[in-house]
Length: 325
Image (cartoon, rainbow, N blue to C red; front, side, top):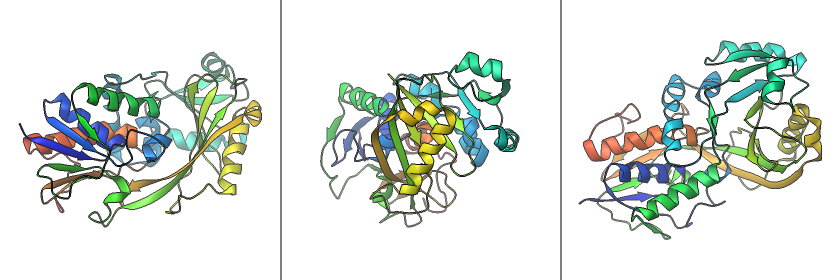
């Protein structure tokens, strides 16, 4: 049986390996960073499976392909299917109406319904409820994929991949720019807060004029707060402006968040192609799967299926870059 070597153990690499294994392929994984952890940008993701919300400022494939992600992940890790609430302060209601025009799959809800869904959002009178959306804990999802692969007999090597591999799939994100010259890094900054005084059960998106914000519950009063999208490749530290705006937007959701404990500050670079859509390219004996941008967990399942189709059946999905493959 052919042995496929997946290079990179972030969400893209682990998803590709998982999909290959599910189809009966023999797989090994290489990543010098070892098991999933803070060294990879997948660690700092929000974990929202929100294709309808993301469609507000994304291309149509994000909406269509992203809808397949919830079931794919539900077969591999815990998925919370409680939907998404999109809110805005009274002065920003035009932004809420604009958001509604640019997407679909929601119902408009009033204060009574908002309080039924999230009692700690008492200041908002109108919202959009995306009932079919979901979210997961990205760190747990990575650990679950890693554990399932090891349970299936996949050897995960904590080292660089050998220079010559017969059947390689490169999922290294920005580390693959030596071959993917049109790949760029987009800086994202996020915070992890603990605030036991606030109880949210689903992702909440605040439409804010300076800093659109999302808050994702992690359980036990812990929330992921994010995230900036900056066309910069400086991932050394968060800026004071970003931190101030993230925290002020959180305060606008619920003033109790102003008393939260900051547990973590995360900064990393998301790999993106010019159109912000992922691509699969075959260069020589290597298949490259990259460019998940801000849609890592949402589009990794579709990327993984496209890679498996190409690797095992030589079938070209829409993600295969025909001009370069």
